[in-house]
Amino acid sequence: MPLLVAICLGLAALLSLPPQTQAQGTERKAADYRVGERLPADRKGAQGYRLIGWDELMPKGWDPMAAFKGLDLARLRDSDPKAQEALESARQLWDQAPVEKAMNGQKVRIAGFVVPLERRGEQVTEFLLVPYFGACIHVPPPPANQIIHVVADKPVAGMRTMDAMWVSGTLGLDRTDTGMGVAGYRMRGEAFEPYTRPRS
Image (cartoon, rainbow, N blue to C red; front, side):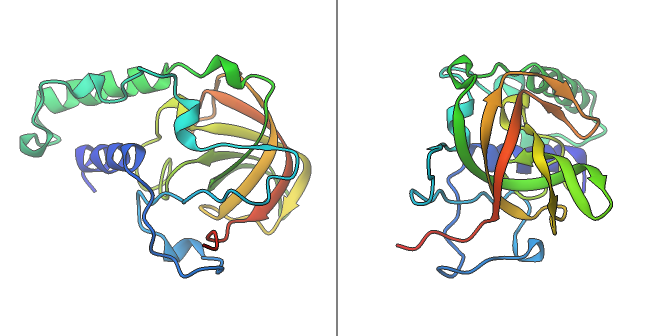
């Protein structure tokens, strides 16, 4: 996939509303999601944690599209120097994306997709949580304020790359370059469960 197309998919996912395509009350496997797909929120089951969406992690007024102002992305090819310059500017802007300071120390519950970083045997001890399917794997990483570096209190069994999960824990504002993407947040992961579509 051309890099410019991948960036555009990531931007579209970041700025779009989550699709409503999953059958109610069913768990989906990673193969069931499309690149760029986001998860709808569920207002139930927070149990002592504040339920948040990904938009709440971006400070008001911060524009993830700032590096692309004035460019017609549809007409640029990856080999175009303007495209390369825009991609480099976007990566720098996104790696330094500001976090929402009010989130520091908050006990939150959020749904996202898993990118494992550290394992102990078959169990995952650290992972990235990202807002849309394919981020950091099939498309470039999203902005740092859309990546949470989760360190699990206890190793988590049965977690695979791009699994959709609910994660609950305490957020901190520690920026970490993981090699898979720059995370603007760090979470002490306390509770994990597979994501299922909210029942209406």
